[in-house]
Image (cartoon, rainbow, N blue to C red; front, side, top):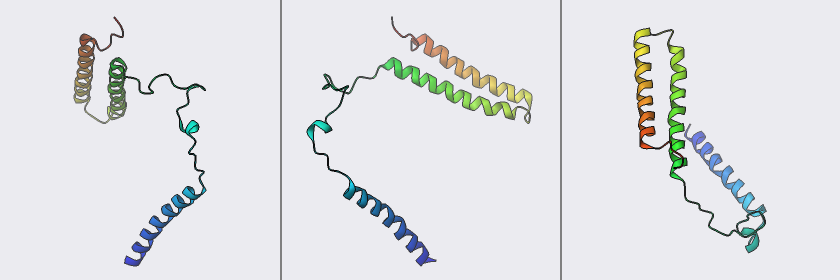
Length: 117
């Protein structure tokens, strides 16, 4: 049993090492300055590739993720509706939706959904 474990460990280390060695020896060395520089439609880039992230895009993405998770939680709840107490199920779904709608209202009041003024 110990020999089998040791053998499988050695094989699992040997194969990736062998693949990395073969790929390193077969790959071409590309030390050309022109080819390793950034490429922008055939022209040299005029500004930095790093652009500042707009906070509006970020907030919209976060709101989208929140409502995406909401859908992922509500859809399975529809399946459990048949096998659970309808009053408890309705109250829990209502509470869940109210929390999300209050969050949306808060975001709207804070101006997170205003794109430009």
